[in-house]
Length: 329
Image (cartoon, rainbow, N blue to C red; front, side, top):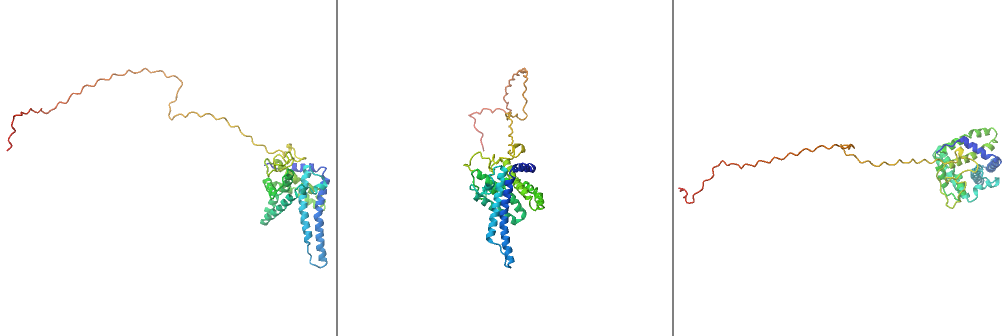
């Protein structure tokens, strides 16, 4: 994960806006004036009721129109400035409707509404989790647009999940990037908002550039890919190798090249096992050993014969068979 250089990012954004400032400012004015007009109508009706000493109530119909206008403005602005940065914009009229053509209407509406709902739910815990969630989901509409150009229609929370994966480790970078425009917006207050005609297109295009920088760093797909999608399309953040803007980063600036793959080390050949030496074995020397003369074998001395034992008793005298035994009285 490589950090994104904000200075280079803004330089690329300014380059992409050259010759497109008229289109960018025209889109900004159109997208801003619609909700302003509706809000003015709502306010005038409330003021009229108050002047007539009636209970001032807001018109539900106007309120619904304001909500619809806000959703349309947000989606159209994000998608249109992505096209401007990519150099694929199709002019003022078509960019006002480009987010709702080619089957993208449902995907963009569902994704954006779910994004608002999830951010609101996180904000109920505390405002900090809500801010973190908003940055996690910030790439969702860009991804929907890229998938549509690849022939894939985002469903449910697919784009939101892909945005969460893409923004891992980069939420802080985008937050700091947004903070870098804070001074411009403060200065715009001293010009009664006129400076916003420069600051807002610059800011929105820079956010699109941030997305393209993340795409260029992605080495693996972050979302499903339609197998029927045309190959060779220059878009497609979901796929490795796609997502490169027509006008924008070059390899020398470090944004179009995926991270280098680690070089696999060559394993050293294994040495054959040496036979184990027995414990306390006598080493074998290569020098020949001189033969020793054989010792003569001593002849075995014969054993003396064993003399028979001489009995000390007198031999019994022979008995006369005619002798009478003595009388036993």
